[in-house]
Length: 489
Image (cartoon, rainbow, N blue to C red):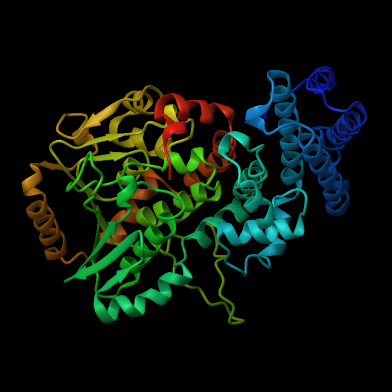
């Protein structure tokens, strides 16, 4: 979160970092004037989008120029790192105050008052075009991606602040969540092939239909089926396909057989987020939002069909007090070997988990320095508050074949019995007719995780994850616990 830096400390800390006095003073004067104009007692009725934008742009541009006077972050002295931290925090504060005033109005303008359904990447791109200097452009992000995570000064933090304030507003936040629950365009195109051949290869994810079941398999074997920017899109598209296929009644989520020397010939469900990509600066902040608002939300809530209004426009601006009108199906996750991090998060949004006796589940987010998705909200429902805190804050591992592990896994069987257990689970579910599956899921969510609770959680997650993702502590954690310096993509 944004750190409060007393005004009296700012100039001395910038000067100690060797920054030129005149531009540093100009930057701090802009900050002071902006704080006065946007403080708790400021008159919001007089807020002007244009003038506020000019002021915030000036602060962001001056702040980034000051950072440019210093070496790359990993090469800075302690005093220079502290000066850089002050600049990043004050710039983030300026963005926070701007988006607190204007994020909802900006979102409404970009989406044509809710008549356009944009995914987070499209929204970030269009917002950046309207707010140059405040939100990073695609060109700026590509340039920053040339650096390792240790050398990034946090361009994506502004994105996190923007999305947090969009989500904080009930109407815009709910609209964004519903927009992300729409089928991806590539899913609609691939559905034709899936219905024709019964199979679709999406690269790092594959879908195969057998009878009334859609089997989704994660294929990122080199990295033990980890999650990263190369998998989150294909995996979400695969989930879309199962949900959209008219002859499919339920989905099965499983990891592929890997060829890694340590686990050669084994199926692995998922080893979590690809920490090597994070360390080398190749993992985008937006991928975290895609996972939570797209992939995981669709597994839990289904997809939202198109709604055509009286003017023929594709609209999602439904009354917020209406029941969820999603198309959803039952999901079974099959865990072999382990479900780490993001893999464990997936188990919290499916309906049934089958695991082998040697499998385990864990959320090593503390060692990584990030927030484990929505697990902070969901895991306590499965194992209770005390064990959830132990897992997230103190690295507790849940072994499948233990009483605690069985709070997450519905069935634990010997490895050689996995396929039979899956077949029996499917036969039992499909044989029941499944007429009420979607209705029962919706009814359970009313008390477990209503849409408003999810929106509120994501308001916090969006901004906190941005700061975690771009923190120096994350880099240090990866070096200490992951030996990240020695690993290569």
